[in-house]
Length: 123
Image 1 (cartoon, rainbow, N blue to C red):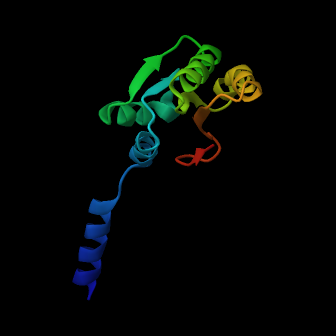
Image 2 (spheres, rainbow, N blue to C red):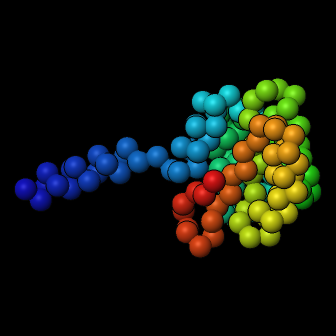
């Protein structure tokens, strides 16, 4: 019986997909073609996974500029623009761009990882 349990566990381990790949695939399914941001340790894997799926990642100097760029792409392409930022100061720096996009009714998605919840995405 223990052999069948370990075989089942082994099959489940092979089927597991990293969360970053799930997020990247969901973005690709929604038609996202561009992602802007400042990569930090919690979100690096998401940027890599997105690039593997053909989403173009554009590194920016700060999160506010990244959010403005994502907002502009959302407006110009009529598809969600994505801004990838880290939690804490990264998210706070993106707030101005988020407010601007909200007031103009532009599509954008801010993706960040909550540092207090390791491995869980918060939107």
